[in-house]
Image (spheres, rainbow, N blue to C red):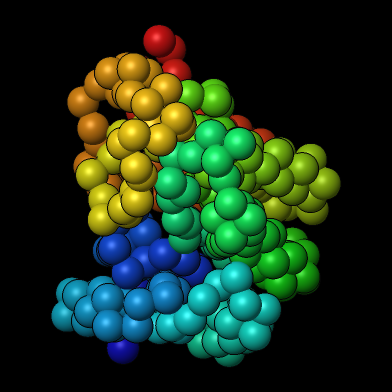
Length: 255
């Protein structure tokens, strides 16, 4: 449904929108009149968020599934294009943590799953959405990178590698498509209160090393503070900002 008056808002895809930063971003986009496709692996959560948006008079479309699956990526893209007539904004936010494992302790399954969800999935969705943005001659893509995109002391080997990859993908897309009216930027959240979990073993080498660096996190952000940065980077107010990885971390990157 769409209870917003005035011009029809942009078509926006937000992944990982069932909770945390994704949920907060979806609510902010909808509150300003954008039409939002909310995607998440947890169908119950994403439908609850859609209910919040619709109760406030906004427009929400739901796709539930694992975004590391190409068929889900295709369904997200097709649903957005069918529902909105195109995709104006893509927010690649969905992600998972590793176990804070050091490289020597990282099992193949941990490495492959974290890289698949955190890096390959946003790549696949970006690849799927780009032709529609190119046809329109405009578009904004915002990735959720991490403090682990900037340093080696914020997570384990798999997560750190995946988020460095997200930073590189952001910059590559920005350079490749800047003359086509498409911008790509990322936020790099520091400590943030979300539902993401870390299955770390305190006695393992990685968590033991990282513990001493966690004192630099400072005051954790709320999910809404991260979402505000996402919405800004997707807005016309950021029209000349492209290829940026923006720390939203209470100064952690400055320490």
